[in-house]
Length: 112
Length: 116
Image 1 (cartoon, one colour):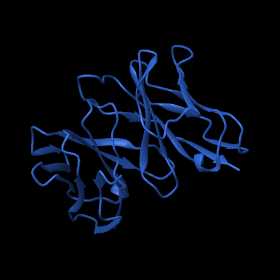
Image 2: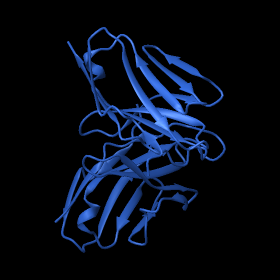
Image 3: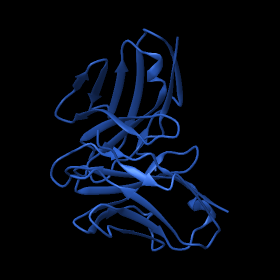
């Protein structure tokens, strides 16, 4: 089951620079997309979402872009901070939020 | 800030034993979920629960698994006869809405289940 792919298992970025995390999906029924952040020994925490009627959603330092035709979304963090170091999961759904399909995650390390 | 809590934080059990993982969702939330994450793998959906019944379940959620909301606050996941491959982190989540409206799910800290 490879409905959701995050092809970069890890990413290192210098503090203050932009972090770009990518997510690709195959299921055309997905129409609501969330990003979760996960620290070690904690549960995932909601970060930002976007619905398929939009192509961009911004919240502070975090912006999510959605390209429906390419079935691709990306999360931009700018400027990146050391506290952003975590695993980021892309989690789309197409079932009114009943079940989110989590991607494998990208481990982001922001270096001071 | 309200949060989802889970107990115990770590459960060690022998293969074949029954385990019950407990969760207290956020109090005004109506939709409840269980996910699991096997070490090094992705977070996988197990089951969603609303109005005292299962609304959706994955193929992972077989007859060995059951969920219950025994009172107004707790939401439990029972594994009847644990297998080695059930060793994982189990996350409970809740959301205020579901059904016809999208809503983010709030996750608990997880219970680490180790089956020996």
